[in-house]
Image (cartoon, rainbow, N blue to C red; front, side):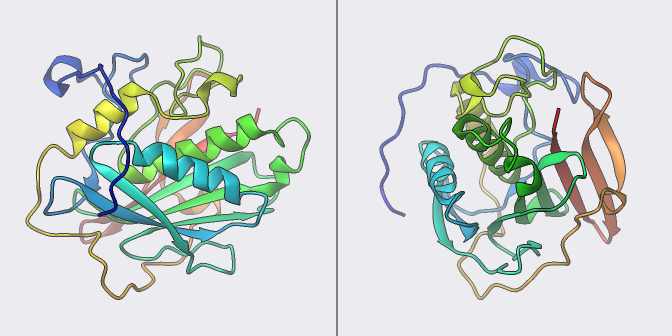
Length: 257
């Protein structure tokens, strides 16, 4: 694994002390989602991020990759993507990142995570250029926040908070009507990753083997399954589609205002 500089972090919060009900808000809440994680046999691991985005998004993908790589348990590497059609079908053992004008459907970004049991097997991030072409969203702050947050979901993190109007937490995993303070991960995000990946597995879902497509992309809300949680505005923020046989897809949504 390539060596990367690591941030000094001072926030260490054992899950036994902070575990709250799903959807809890505030920086003191656990925001892993049921402990779902990439299976790996080592204390640290590398995850490939497939670059299917246009040049307008490339700087934000590189920034988010560098931000998340300062974790002590996770390295991310941007590689050539395998979903060139931008509909973003998943690829097993890596995360595909795509952008397209997906239409006036209400969402800025989707993070979709493919599961087998409790293990993540693939992830996709979709960025909706229909909205990012609008002046209100075509800003570095909004692009950083959405890219960073949807990638965070594919690592096993949930939202820290789902109230657009609260005081910003300084984390991209925070819903906010003001993206400026929330463009990057914060110490709580890194501490949570350390908790999620504190153990080792007997299997490996991030091994660098020959990769194959995992499934068709789920772009329409009707394909996302049941709404498992709603944000402070009453909008569904997390969906689960049970595919049977222990397989499922979890979809996290950032809605446009």
